[in-house]
Length: 46
Image 1 (cartoon, rainbow, N blue to C red):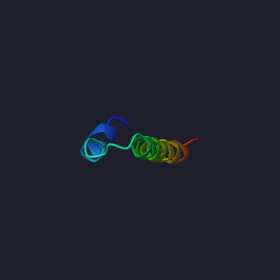
Image 2: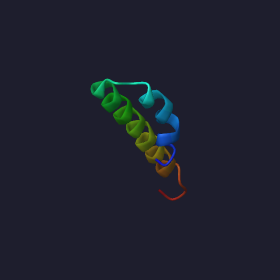
Image 3: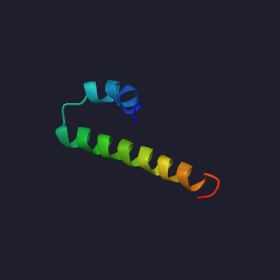
Image 4: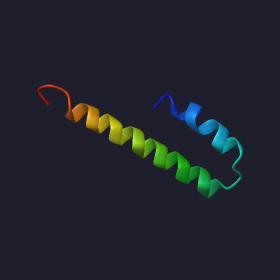
């Protein structure tokens, strides 16, 4: 989650469309959550 600003800052800085900014943020947050879910599922004993 803490890397989202680093990944999106250059893209968002060049974007004036609030709907596109929202879409990009939601997509990135969803991706991070899915990665976390997969990491948790792969923990031993889970």
